[in-house]
Image (cartoon, rainbow, N blue to C red; front, side, top):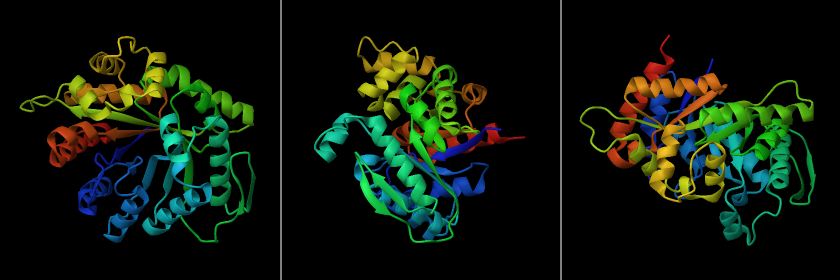
Length: 325
């Protein structure tokens, strides 16, 4: 059965801004609270702070960016959140865009898949209590985390295209996607994951988590059309070369280069799920039918345009509809 989770739909500057969403996870049928990379309040500190405030919920990082931290630091931070919350963690990682890599590291990764393989393999080994001896070419170190009994930390990879999907099938516990239409997941990503798992001789597949931007268009809420919400919450993604490449593969016409045209295609392919509650539920069920194990409800656009209260209202209504027996 597909689980449903919640993405923190804002980049908090104060812990109080995040607490209502942790409360929503705690008091509903949501599986966990997720956050992507944030450059204001660091996500690991946000989740640890919420735990200290009494909101201890399962958490997911979808995704933090590899150029920002060494694999040892990544494993230590993820396990620290598990220890602080007393709940399982999904630690997802991604290489980021070539421009981001160049800005942080001085040059982009020459072989992003090779870097991701080394990174995830090292983090998984450290979390398993192993003494990891990484021999490069990208990471060379020897280390072991101090022993501690902690809840499980699964290691995930951010996946947009088949190459990273195959790698995730080989080495990751979790596949994490963002803005990926359900048919593209079913026909392209999942077969590539299966191919990678078979190549590695794995007997079980990684879990597949889809971050799905969504928002309701109720009566009285002006300016909440799916196309407008898609732009408000995903404009940067819909202009990034690696996302445009993925969307083009998924059937979105990106040839004009116009953001409005891309947004229309994102809505038409179901990568953004909008409309009334019945339409949203139908769109989310398509992810279940595609084989997704966990759908993460991303109401960033609603939060940006209409505020925290409306975002929480949408999440509550959608969660009630999709998790009802």
